[in-house]
Image (cartoon, rainbow, N blue to C red; front, top):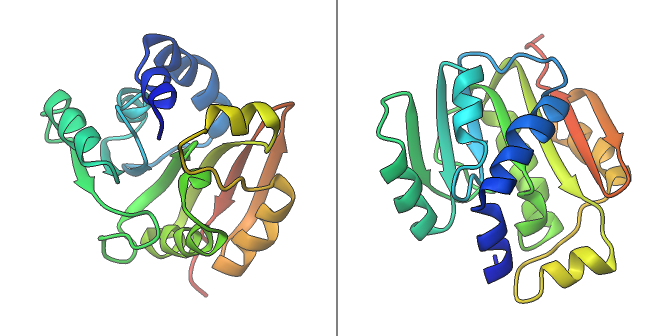
Length: 190
């Protein structure tokens, strides 16, 4: 992430927006269950709200400085902060009741890594668990905001097929003007 993204994503304005506007829309009345995997929390704009909605949060962050800051802020046994990569999750199968990724997927370096992350999210979800994501559309403003940062936009239109290939069902993609949300179910085993 670039300096602007680091500043904005660590701001009280972003925390307010994610807690009051984005998460209610992203989750759309779905329950998170008892153990949520928060992918790419950055400085933790969604961590507190996810903890309020679930009994336990595991936050997976790639950036080591964010890992240190987030771990220092959350000393509760209900929050675990782990350094890792979304495309190769360091967790056993069927660990989490839900997975939440807010503005994370476009920071993965390729579509192949995004697809690997979808497969990993499916793997670590319990049967009946839900995957939730929030992403921005591609555009000149989004590209300008990601100068000197990884930006591999993911299209809302491709999401259904990519998640289906990863094993998800009941996939809902809701598009807004500049962004979209995704809800997908890891079906119960046959």
